[in-house]
Image (tube, rainbow, N blue to C red; front, side, top):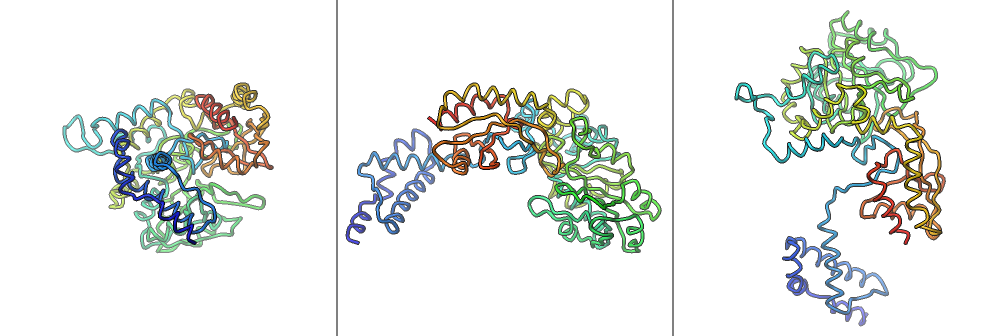
Length: 466
């Protein structure tokens, strides 16, 4: 105990440390608050170790202490939002920021941040304008809808639509479509928050048109369809089509709404995936209001897009919630840029990062992985085994969960550590590398590794294993 007390008295005083660090703080323009916190945390960490551990190294020189403080300052000054290399093979990776934006869209984002814009200023009249007019005509032109509105995500799109059309009234939905997707977003919870009353019909696996018709009452405000996104019920199943619901809605003068989740403007079957309804097809079916994400299969920024009949959309636009859920200039700038690419169906496959990654043929991905191996394998040597393996990528974002994309990955099997430790260490690299573990091996799937990232990925792995 005496030795421990002696060591505790050796811990430096915070003010004295800050005085000694003052030239470094000024040279690197370190906020004093950050510097003070770094010193306090460093000293407190050693104090805690002394009180709880038998053997602790106490720095013997001021220089050694200063290096500890500088390292902690660098850690505190480091930005929390970091660029990572996505080696998971999941294209629309929710936890990694979903869709990547093309270069020309990034330039438009930069302009929106660096300059004043006509966000809510009509250049023709010189008076206040509407931010939604900047993209509404484009969305309508591309989808065939009469009107459109953009809010900050698809959950918000569903919420404001239900709040507008069905507050204090009933909404009929198939029991098999009461889904929960990422972040505990549950359709029943959103419906309750909107003030609508849920009326579920049918069975989990089978719902018929007569189930909807029998549930219609004077309190019914809306018929609702929901894309099941990240799960499927297979086997003895049946669901009511959009066209059938539209006919039923017309019979009883009830609007029909469909939540598409990951809305797409492109037929995915051309990439070897099963056909998914496009936004254009759903609009053509006569659905009154349709909601979908702008940052999933569409390949744009986080946003929720609402399209449909003008008389319905105008009511949603007038909802006071719209003020709370509206999008900012960055979303508008990037969304308009991405949407305009869809005017050329062939060119969009090259410009749109999400569509490009989904459509990349396996042979292209294999060449990318081989290029990485040629630059890396001999320099890593025996410290880690690197092998090219066939694998399966995923679209992600809740889309097509049971269907994979044939891909190629580099398999890493370290010689001196465990695969789980390697995966953890890769997450602490200067540019974190996020892979996936399968069968006691770490895979880096090159479907989601950009060509421009290969040199950096090579250097990081060579440095790590050297």
